[in-house]
Image (cartoon, rainbow, N blue to C red; front, side, top):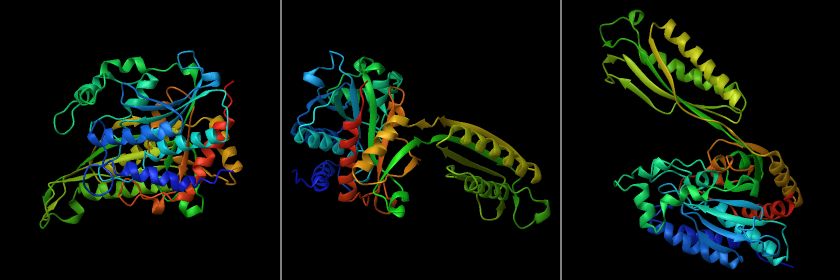
Length: 415
């Protein structure tokens, strides 16, 4: 009987990877840096311990592969199940975001190998180079290259030191012009399963260690500007004011009310600029952002329409000018029903009922969905903290996630 403490083993590897960081609090590991290279060395060692063959593709994705039946190779057309996440972090982030989703499936394959399991398909664990988009103003290059959706023009984008993505990749020993050749045949990919900490408090507060993701929320952002009339704060009577900030304040509360009244909708006013922005002047202009997120695109679209009507009504009543435009839109990513079912059954086999919940944050799965069916496991995280040095996932939740991955892999039907 296997007596390995898989949660403790995962924590040990995660600690080694956390040491692959630039100086400073927490973990700072940006793509195509010495810290990235150090992390790849650790991951290669882990993958090889699990009996995987290892290579680095043209996007900087480290791939550990377990061949299919009778050693059937990728070139021979073996169907493949893909698992993994990203190795990079935000600046001064935590030791779990992204990288935990690389370590855990490797350990699940190690566990299956020790048990003598023989799978009727190949399995690959992928450690993508850049999901966070911190160093360069782009993200998800690895999964987009696999899906054939990467925009090669992004190679000319520069970091804050003026180094282009192309040059950074070349200095790392990669061949950026080979990215189009990475596109996978969807007919040969069984699916993608990603493991990630929740980045929120829902699982911990509900007493669950794991959750199964149903969808990655769609996102849209709006730029709103209200035009009033600036005036001296001491000479213009209240009844005669066209105060843009008072109107904007009303709109901010309306955004909150809108989200509180619609299940699953998240709405945020994250930036506000007031002009002239001085203590003794009535604000004449306010520009603000509104971000809407929802797992259902129809709900998000309906919320945007309701927001526009509210903004128009506030502006008309307060005699303010209104400009409103959508600056960004990303559709929701639905997780595949068959993968949700497989993960839920796997959780039950491991002795845990895993609740279903949406992801408000974007993940590699959102880009992988253009290639194949996708699914995600969430683990609880202490106090819901993420992207911070205090980010923490306990060993019990990690061990349970490894069990669920092991069981889910065993339940995949390649037919």
